[in-house]
Image 1 (tube, rainbow, N blue to C red):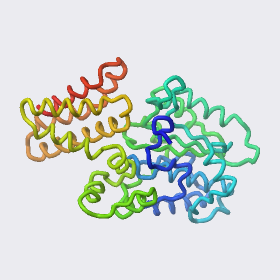
Image 2: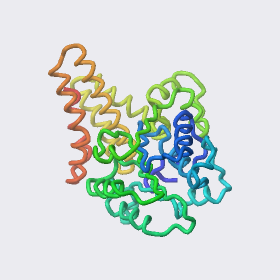
Image 3: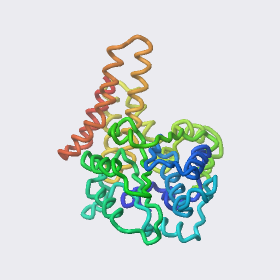
Image 4: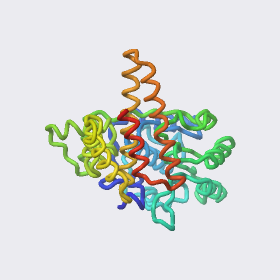
Length: 342
């Protein structure tokens, strides 16, 4: 399945089709017991780094709720979804009348995934709740992730959260909850997921047919992935390790050699079909700058630390401006690399 069309990385399983979840047993047990208690909150904020299983957990919990509409009769554990059940088949095919998955839509003109969840998508939730459920079942909305809501869409979601319909459940996913509207966060029950440990990450990759057989490459992938399956797939299937190596060449080179290294990296990242690896690089660049800023601050070099911290904060804004005004991507990348090199 193409990542440009469906938003799913090469080698990954769409979360609505994924029946296997690794490393989040405590969160699964919490959700099952909280639902069984009958005190389940109408909105749960499932937060944690990208690619650790938040969406898979959300779909698994939605399957549990829709399969057991009476909380008191629901099991105390989330069972592995049965692909042959009617609920699972409907969820997997996107045909469930009781579940709505709000994510970035595909632009019909370009065939590419849009950069944000728009207010038009949120309006689908209003229509979704206006339809009377023939079964009297719960209505579940998965916002995946809420970080992608633009301002108008976020305000529209907030209005629904303020007066939620009866028997409604919102599963709000977030990679960076601190960036969400405080009013959205305040109306959600937070559930924080941690990055996967090496054993769970290896098991998750093995489930996708990716075997890490030990050695330097496996160790490097596990270290650079930071407990994220999606990061590991970007490293392995999208050339992420080569991009990091090229970035390190930029940092270590001097004079004309540094300029040549910048241009080589810029040419790769500016490719039209390299959206996934471009986003991967921006994340790596931001993490590098934030890490360097912390190190400099601890060593007492506060002015330099402040400069790098500001640059880390500016990365996303500069890319957004570049896209908004259709500026040359390579020149934007070169500008960022030059600032980092200085």
